[in-house]
Image (cartoon, rainbow, N blue to C red; front, side, top):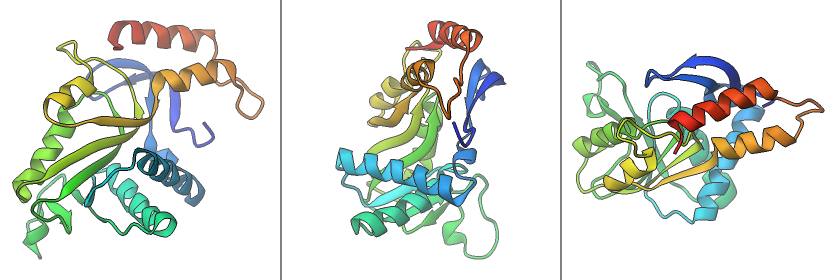
Length: 212
């Protein structure tokens, strides 16, 4: 909450839904201290889950600094020297075109861990994986690790995790939005409650409609 990465109000999501909260991971990276704490949280989760992977992929745009930071902390704190990279939103049309869609030392047969900020639907993650498999052959998905799972169902009624599971991906999250809200309802931050009854009511109604 100190970084204001989690905000309450009225927000239109990419999915078109009107949400009473919004998670802006950019704010969790906008100082050296915040960036270090965020990266360390990912590294701790990777260590706890004992992931075995060759390549760390950060989807553009928020995933790019996350992948860079996490790769660095994996090396300095766990002596794990992992290759990492990211995709381009627009294809590069000049210079070295070997990296026109994917930047980084991705190799045929790599096992890949994707890290990103949040997830609402699984489709964007599936599309991003398509960029990787179009670039190199025989890639193996090791999972998708995010900071916060919004725990929403898609139009099909399935959760993002279920949609991803059908495509061979396992979704992991450091936190879920219900875990965060449960904590904020009962624990003050710097001596102040961060959510009031109106905020809790709006959140509960949203989850009742869109939650899994």
